[in-house]
Length: 517
Ligand SMILES: C[S@@+](CC[C@H](N)C(=O)[O-])C[C@H]1O[C@@H](n2cnc3c(N)ncnc32)[C@H](O)[C@@H]1O
Image (cartoon, rainbow, N blue to C red; front, top):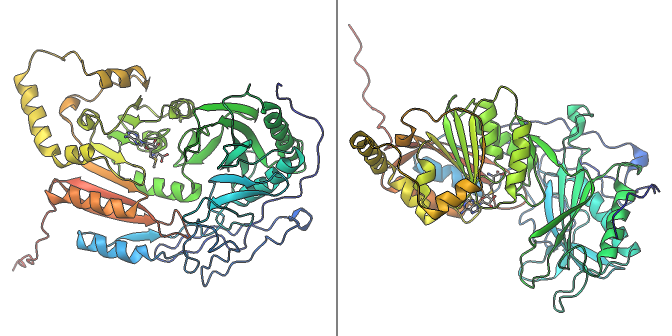
C-alpha cells in the first residue's frame, strides 16, 4: 500500500519539556541561556517538567538504576574520569587540560531504543545491564524532550494500530527498534528558540525483509499515524520525517541494509562547526549536538589556515568539511568505511559557503588498510575512531611516520620517471567510490608531505590512553594540548580532543637568561 499523507489532524498531548537549568560548568564555565518553559496549556499530561538544581548537578531521573544508560547521578558536571584525565595528561606533558561540562540534561539528540512488550503495553527503552530485558524510559533526563514526546506518540500509535513489538526468543513481531534523531535546525525560528523546538526523524526498524513483505500495511498505518499526529498539520510539529529500516537477522545488530524514506522531509540538516550538515539516518551522527559544536570550534583553532587535512574515520565528513570552510584548507580528504555516509557528504558539500575553495575528496575505504597511503599528502591528520580506538596498522604507520617522510623525500629525489601507475586493488576501489570536489591541485611536493599535527578525538578513554602511550612511546609524537568535553553526562565517559605534534617534546630550558649589564 503506498503511503499517503492523511489530512486529519488530531491534537498531540505530548510536548517536550525542559528543565529550568540546562547547563552548569566548572573548569571551563560556559553558560547557555536557560530555555523558557513552554506555555502552560502545552505542558504534557505527565509530571515530566523537572527543575534541576545547579548546585548538585544531580540527574534526578526516575529511571536511574533500572536503566543502563546512566551510571552516576550526582555531580554530572564533573565525571570522576576528569581527575584521572587531568593527571594522565599532566604526566605526559600537558598541565593545562581543560574540561567543558556542556549541557547536563536534555543533551541526547540521537537515541536507538529497543521496542518490546505488547501492543497494548509497549516498552521503549534500553536493556537492563547484562540482560535483554527492556526498561521503559519515558522520562529520560538525557534525552532531548522531543525524543520523549516522540516515544509517547509512538506508543499511542503502536497501541492504536495494533503493532506487535518484537519478540526476541521467537523472532516474531513487527517493530524491533526505533532510532530517534533530533534536528535543531529551523531557520524560520530565532536562533535561541531552535534547540528546544527540535523535530524528530523517526526510523522504525521493522522485522521484515522489505516494504513489500507481509505486515507492510501496519508499517504504513503506523507511519501515517505518526505523521498525522506529529507532522506539520498537527497541533505541534514534532515529527520531522519517518523512515523504515528492514532487519530480519537474529543477531544483535540493530539495523539491516535496507532503508526507506516514508514521510516528511527526506533531508535532515543540522548546523555545527560553522556549517550546515546533512545526516541520513543510516550515517553516523554524534548524539550530543551542542557539545559536538563546542568541540569543533575548539578543534578549528589547532588547524592552521591553508592546511591540507586528512580526516580518518570521517563519517559524513562533518569534521573535515567544517575545517575546509572555517580554516580555508587547501585540501581535505575524508576516509570512511560506511558507504551510506557518502550521500550525506555530497549534500553537505552543496551547502558549503561559496568562499570554501578547498580541494575536497571523500573515499569509501578502510582507514586501517595501507594507512600510509591516506596520510601522505597532508600536514594535519584528524582521527575520530569508534570506542575501540585506532587500528594497529594505523598506530604503526603513525609511529613510523618520520622514517616514511625520509624515504618519500629520497625516492622523490632519485626518481625522475614520473607518477607510477596505481595497481593496488583497494586503492583503486576507494578511488572509484570517491567524491571529488574543487579544482585546486595538490600542493607542490605533496607526495612528500606527511602530517606534522595529529588531532585525536576519542570517546573511549581506556583505549585512548593505550593509543596515546603507543604514539608517544618512540617519541615520534609529543602531546601539545588536551581538552575534555562532557559528551555523555550521567556516564563515566568523556570525549577527548588531544593535539599531538611530530617529534620529541622540546626540553624547556631551566636556565635563566643572563641579564645584560
Ligand atoms: C566516532 S564516528 C566519527 C564520525 C565523524 N568523525 C563524525 O564526527 O561525525 C567513527 C566513524 O568511523 C567509521 N569507521 C569505523 N571503522 C573504520 C575504518 N576501519 N576505516 C574507516 N572508517 C571507519 C564508522 O563507520 C564511523 O562513521
